[in-house]
Image (cartoon, rainbow, N blue to C red; front, top):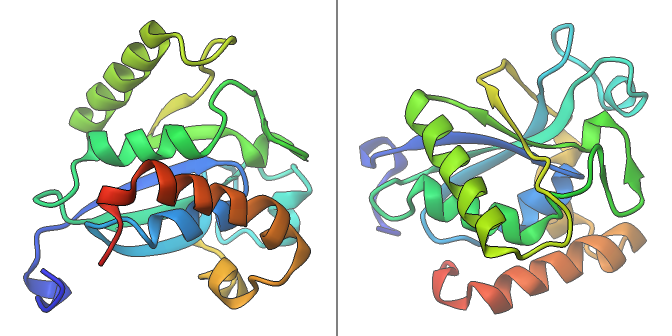
Length: 186
């Protein structure tokens, strides 16, 4: 598949929020079957929000990633398995020290099938008792996606020595690589 042009591949889209989009972006870029990752904003009021406006908490947007993936290589269910492993879905409106509705755990479902799969995955994870607290991930309808500013795209790759990347993003990437070693891009 690595030599096949994107235009001839099958593709689907997922829009996911799980804290800072730099973490999600860095992980999903390494996942086999992912064709493209774009950091951005969704689920708030007003078009074309800026990073500063979203971080203020006044727009209601979440930091999200738009993941374009090949469903013949990576199912939406498997994508969600990675998603729920790399962030804490039990903390409302926060991930670690990042606090606010912009950091909420959310799946913006692009179809009824995605909604059904998201609910099923959450039900299965809840039944497995992996966390001491209940999963609070919002399963939401599709919402307009607004790309983040250019400097946010592939942030970890371009800023690996930045302290936030070293102490927050890098451990999540390492956890992903260890847990899903068989699913890494070659």
